[in-house]
Structures are given as structure tokens and as C-alpha cells.
Image 1 (cartoon, rainbow over the protein chains, first blue to last red):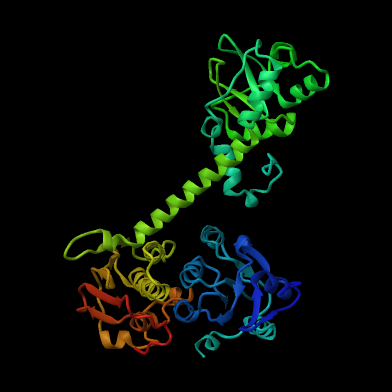
Image 2: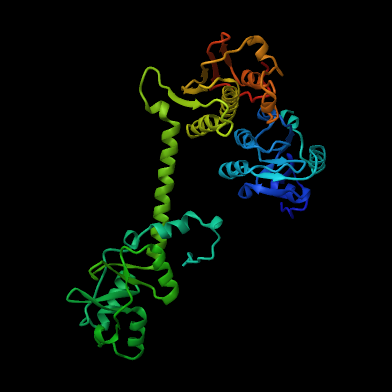
Length: 134
Length: 322
């Protein structure tokens, strides 16, 4: 199976998409974790409360949030999330970028709102974390 | 040669093999037992030596000093010219290019590429020949080193994951202690990250690691948000049958433990909530991750939290009801 990286690759288990493809499709700016952009995104989660992300984000999740401070890196790293998308033009501070770089956590930003980003991700075939429990 | 000394390789693509060519010294891969001839040896004898040892070149020594090199190409020329009775001294390449034994291997790769020779005599600091290097020595040396490293890594992993079987005692545990400073959000997550790393080294199943990491993170954040100046302590006791996470602080304590455990209840100030903390989910998350949870906190006094996660429980978080 080859992937021309312009769209989702449908496998037997469902869509498989690399973070890099998502970044291109949504026009996201990469701030950290460039080396880890080939990770496969298997689900998505959106929330601005860290404890919620801690409880719900899964290994391979892309996490959409408005938070841009360095503690998001620890949450993504501990849950083994594929990466973080920061919305509404919020810029991660230097501490966040440095920490993300150290831990190999991709941080991507966009001017789009969380609602729009999640909608686009869903259209591209990224399912919610609930699908993993089925 | 499969390995090119190509300085244009981007840093991200440098492999262990590339590093090794810089780390290894020529002396570590060269052939030490060298067959030699003298200038007086006849070309007929050279042919016999080359055939017998299946080699393609021989260093020429006179009174122990390297004076030349005689190769299969020189032999072919002598054969074609009907000069097999000639002596090595007349047919050899005099003053051959040599390499020093203590040079990095990468230099030899460069030399093989640059000169196109099949071998280089290797000399020590006094200029005395101590070995010979062929491209196949380089390849074999690298492969051997890679194999050794791979083996060592396997042993390290094996040792870490079998530590509980190797240590003989009535009760074996590994204790980890982390000091948590109050209000230090910059360091938040460091204890849970390090505990997670240790559990990974020990080969603990991933669902167990995930639960331990989440419970530790929430306990760590609680200490950072809620404690007085003294901060607190996070501990992890790793036993063969369970992981026991501890969180201890000296106050101010929890006014109503049952209320604090309720989902969505938090006493965190607004500035902390704005960072996305203080959702009132911390203890709920910890309880979900725990097989057993003990929380004691007389108000105005110290708080003790103990979370036990058994190794044989594989239920992922989110599936467990508190």
C-alpha cells in the first residue's frame, strides 16, 4: 500500500494518517518535534483542562487545545499523544517549545478555532477517543 | 566500500555506523599478523605466497623497515613481461603510503576512496609496521563492533527487566523519591516522567505504566498547586507485584476529603485555573488509575496519599469505574 500523502490511507483498522499529512492538510505551523511528524494519528481529543487531557488522550491521539504553556508537553508526553495542535493563534512560549523539543513532542499551531480544527480532523477520518473503547 | 566519508550527510541521517567510523581507531580493526617479503624475494615466490594465503598484496620489509609493497598487479605485469625471476626490490612500489594505527577509521575510508588501493600498511608512532588494513578489515571491524553493542544493549535490557529475579531477598522493592516544590509549574511533570522512564526500563506492561504515570502526575500537580511553602514529596515503590505511589506534604491539608474527591471540585485560584489546572479532576483521575487509594488529610495538617496499582491488572484507564 502506498500513500501519496494527499489524503488518508484507509487500512483494515480504519484511517491511518501521519501527523505530517494532517499538518499539511490543515495548514498548521510546526514549532517543535519536527522529527516525530511521521507518527501515526489514531485518534483525536480536544480540551483545555489538563486533567481531562491526562485522563482521555491516548497513545497516538492528536490533542487540540488553547493552552500554550509548558505543562501541555508533560501531558502529551505522559499520555504518549502523537502531538498537540494549539488553536486560535495562541503562540507557545519558548519554555514550551524547548521542552517539547527535548521530549520529542510535536507542537503545531493554527489561527483556526478548536471547533473548526476538530471538524476538519473528523472529516479527514480522525476518530474521537471513544472509538478506541468500542 | 559501502561506507562513504561524505561530510554532506545531514546530522539527522547520521547512523551509528557513521559514528563508529569516527569512534573506532584503525588499530582496533587492522590485521596484526602480516605476511611480509624482503626485496630479495623472487616474483615466483610472491606468486606462491599470494596464492597460498589468498591475499592481493604484501608489504616488503628490509631489516624490519617497511620499504615497499608488492601487489597482485605488479605480479601480473611481471608475468606478462616474462620477468618472474626478477626480485621484489625491482618490481615493488617503493615508499608506500601508510596510515597510523591510532588514526580514526574514517581516515582510512577517505584513503581507500582517494587512492583506490586495496590495502595500506599501518605503522606505529615510531614508523614501525604493526599491521595491514584492507576494506574488508574495515567492514568486518564495524560489523563486529555493532554486534557487540547490540549484545550489550540486550544484556542491559535483560538485566533491568529481570532485576527482581536476580535480587534475592524476602521483599525486594525499588524506591524512588522526588522533592516537589510548591508553585513550581516549570518543573511540573518531572517526577511522573522519571517514574515512567524507570518503569519502562524495568519492562513493566504499558497499561500499568500509563496508570502509574497519570496518578503520579495528578499527585505531583496537587502538591504544586495546593501546598504551602514547603512543597512535598512524591515516592514510588516498585515491587514485583505492585507499584505504590506516595504523595506526602506538610499542609495545609484538605478541609473535606469526600468533597475534594468529588469530580469538578477544586479550591485552585483563578490564575491556576486559567492554565488549565484546577479542573477538580485530579483525585478522580487518581482514583480511576488506582486499584487501591488511601487519602488522609486532617485539615491544617499533612496530607498523605497512597495509590496502589497491581501488576496483574491490565484494565486501561477510562474503562475503570471509581
